[in-house]
Amino acid sequence: MPRPRLRQMERAYGFDEVALVPGDVTINPDQTNIEFAVGNHTLSIPILASAMDAIVDPAFAIRLNMLGGLAVLNLEGVQTRYEDPGEILDQIARTAEKKVTALLQKIYSEPIKEKLVSQRVGAIKEAGAICAVSVTPASTKRLAPIAKDAGMDILVVQSTVTTARHISKSYRGLILPELCQQMSVPLIVGNCCSYSAALELMRTGIDGILVGVGPGAACTTREVIGVGVPQITATLNCAAAREAYLKESGKYVSVITDGGIRTGGDLCKAFAAGADAVMIGSPLAQATEAPGKGYHWGMSHSHPALPRGTRIKVGTTAPLERILFGPTSATNGTQNLVGALRTGMGVCSARTIKEMHKVKMVIAPSIRTEGKYFQAIQNAP
Image 1: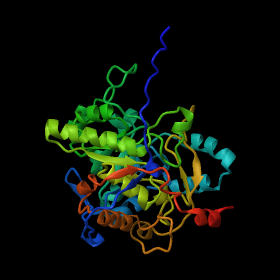
Image 2: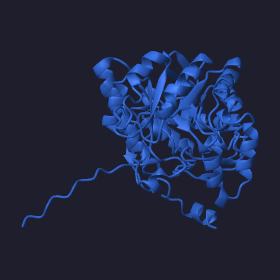
Image 3: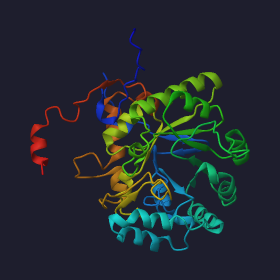
Image 4: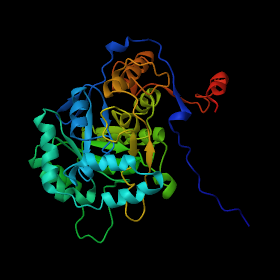
């Protein structure tokens, strides 16, 4: 009997498996343009802080926006459940590893308070900062209008995996085209990792799409349910959808690579794969200003039945400004991320982010180990 054909699997690539090829002309780093625009808002640096309680509170959001980036406040976190979130964050930081998941499940069972949604958004706006907030699809209809009335500038609708079509028992779930019309603010939706799903989401009228399922340091989705696509391939897929939708409609939808970025090298590779901006978690959780006090935990860590996150200790390494702009004596690429991006662009002949999209990448699984024998000896335990 003939042997049945097996399904063919596509090879996918993460940050550690590719490298950027230098350009034929080099450019001074200070002559590169790294601005990122979403709606009528323009950021001087294309970096967003993840909507996680260990990273973003109103004070952090204000500080990052002053430095040119954008922090996204989680409207379903401790900031909107507790009058004094600082006390709760202290408790999380003090709790032993074996007990912290149960504690988080208990903490996040406290109801969200609508007055706190208004207060947190209002605090960011009163400081003159751009206010971006994140909600899950299930809570969008309830919380988004409250945030809008309080002055919200950008709405992020976010879940582990987001699609334009959803099957459930609900008669009318979240209809993204209707939401775009109702909110009249830039709408970013995520998360996504495939061409077809990204294209369908773009056709709903959104302004930006978050790319990445399970790559974050504090996320365990890939371990728990086996789902995810390495970030280089995921970004390439969604960037291809962006170009197809641009030809189809004339509208440019921003692609934002979300998660898995640890170093300046990762950040540069995300842009070369097609990102217009990046969303970062763990590197910013290490900032002195981060509310997590040296810890970071996944957004799904507190799920009452199937946690898909973990608390990790990232430490407190430097002020936010140094992590973004330096100067630094760290040699591992974890600080001066903006300097790394500008330098990488200059080496690769890219004056703008869109020119960075055209930089040649090669498959290079030994890129981090080639010729590094003595570094490995030095760093051995």
